[in-house]
Image (tube, rainbow, N blue to C red; front, side, top):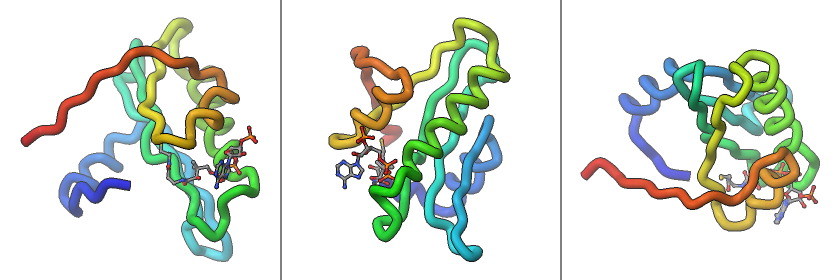
Length: 108
Ligand SMILES: CC(C)(COP(=O)(O)OP(=O)(O)OC[C@H]1O[C@@H](n2cnc3c(N)ncnc32)[C@H](O)[C@@H]1OP(=O)(O)O)[C@@H](O)C(=O)NCCC(=O)NCCS
């Protein structure tokens, strides 16, 4: 996953709409976040499971928690998007996401 640096990461985490952090014995082993305006638009970001803990259903648990929160707390019709890394599409499809055309740009 990309390293945005300490300052950007602190701002980013403070603006989380809803976050899920999985811990095993105090050690962070997985996470996922929803960001957005709380009304019309939200985005799933930072979904990751530590390599030692992958393939055990934690990705599904993270996505179920994020989607469950969104369904319970965001207005009907809110648009939730994400950019899936290659290999992760199946995980997101299982939680109701479908392919759309997306574009992105990095701040130079
Ligand atoms: C993508 C990721 C979050 C999945 O987490 P996970 O805990 O391994 O996922 P789960 O065990 O809940 O399995 C989720 C799905 O991914 C599949 N999967 C799990 N590990 C996999 C692997 N190593 N290779 C390919 N598919 C895998 C599973 O088959 C499952 O699909 P299914 O239920 O339809 O069979 C994790 O692999 C990861 O952190 N990858 C690196 C970071 C990343 O790519 N994040 C996504 C950014 S968009």
